[in-house]
Amino acid sequence: MKVLWNEQIIDESKVKIDLEDRGYQFGDGIYEVIRIYDGCMYMEKEHLDRFWESAQKIRMTLPFTQVELSQRLHRLANEVGIENGRIYFQVTRGVAKPRLHDFPDSAVVQPVLLADIQPVSRPSVKQNLGIRAGFVEDRRWLHCDIKSISLLGNLLALDEAKQKGFEEAVLLREGFVTEASASNLWMVKDGILYTHPDGQLILPGITKMKIRELTKALGIEVKEVAFTKKELLAADECFKTSSVAEIVPIIEIDKQKIGDGMPGKVTKRILKAYIEAINLFVQAHLDRCQ
Image 1: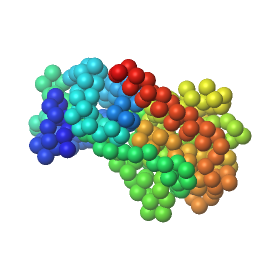
Image 2: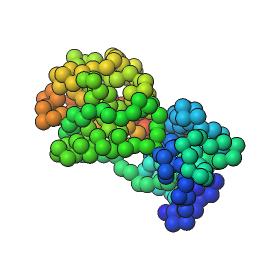
Image 3: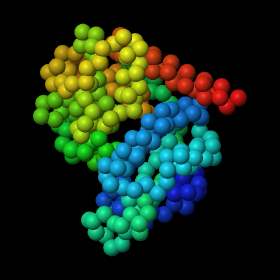
Image 4: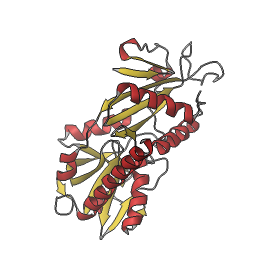
């Protein structure tokens, strides 16, 4: 498989990660994942904007512009040729010797870019049937708004849920629901859609951004407020969102049914509108290319 390594597209077997790369040693880096549909990168600009925001928050100076990074990612996509998948890209702060906790001089140490593409299909079975989740205490750090490559807290939460026999973790911080292990979380009560407000406790989702737009057109009221475990268990519907998973209903938490234990009407409406928005985007992109 071909990958992007800084400015080069090379075989992944030729990539050499330095022992003292700060991403390898400290998890000092950021990443993004963009969904590809029929060869088109969905919401690319929004992902790149968030990438730059993450870089700013960790005081990293990126050695390329958004246009230059976009061009490199598209070169990789054309080279690999996967029509439906996801493109993952990350930047570490670079190789600095000796190993020190201090951030190195950005004029001397250049960040390292790496990107790859893997095939991904729509999780239709999970979208149609829903999944089962379990509550897990949110013990992550207080910079969850940064899309950091250091994801150990998220991985531990997901593993704890899976050890209990669930497919997903619903994270709780001081009694309030924050998000899922790697997705934004939503609940529906009396026709109103609720989700945790953006801030340092959750990642500002790109799919969440699209849902804000879609629900406005659908006439569905959205309230971005923190809600409790008790309120979620009393909800009519629940679902999670991410760029790769899209929209997936959560029909049960800690073995307690959410609503009637089936994907709900509001969830289905939003999923239908989301897929339609993707199809319109792809068609518009193909029309421009003709």
